[in-house]
Image 1 (cartoon, rainbow, N blue to C red):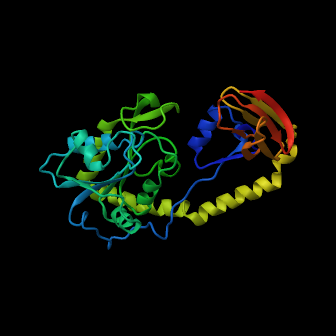
Image 2: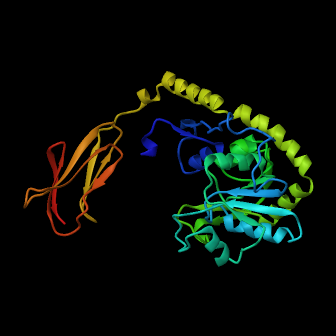
Image 3: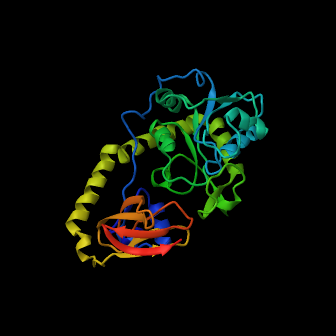
Length: 342
């Protein structure tokens, strides 16, 4: 389906490079970035929060899983700072859909031996509280193994909060040259994930240098005024270049250019082909680039029962659920195209 499209729009150059590496034509890819709500996320030193008031606080917001490196961030914090140092780590990292058998963040901290009096847990705070935390915490921390965009990171940068992040993937579209990047040491296959991951067959992840993460956390703690002044300057750049008003202009210009060029006129329309198979139940796939819609019916010939009906387009497939012996009749827009026993 992807290769039949006239054009592909992605939010970052990194995603463009990945798609080109997978064989998609580079000249058919346009970068249309995401943005940030600059009317909500901006520096405001009058904002406070009970957990950040009169304390040096690191704030982590993201789902507890391997890709987000949540466990490693917490481990690094505990190893980096002594108990007598006046720092705290605020984490909002619940994962109600985890596959690790653990239900709460508290259970996970206990399971991994990460319980610490300096860690403060928030369970998905309301949006207003989340905004207050981004504006009033000392440092925002993100050190993921991959990010498609990283909305909390761009929001924290827009707030003028010193922000630590892994120097990789889609977030570099706005973060590169800004913030406090953590060095990437190497890549590892996703199958090397050691905890709480859903798909182990999607290629490689970047592996952050977590020793470097600890050094960056200590550096910003030890010279905070310098990093805060940099963050305020970078906030102006982020809010200028990635406001939704500016991004909407990029999107509008991309649409206008697409309509002027009308690349679909150069596309050769190939008649659609209907591929019927019965390997694991009856299945119909429509191959071709003619944008048509089809009603697919799976009928039990013996009983006349319409077992399943689906409407699909070219580049899609559909299948009936039963896999036991049935004398199937398959119709496309009322015309029979396939018959077999399964």
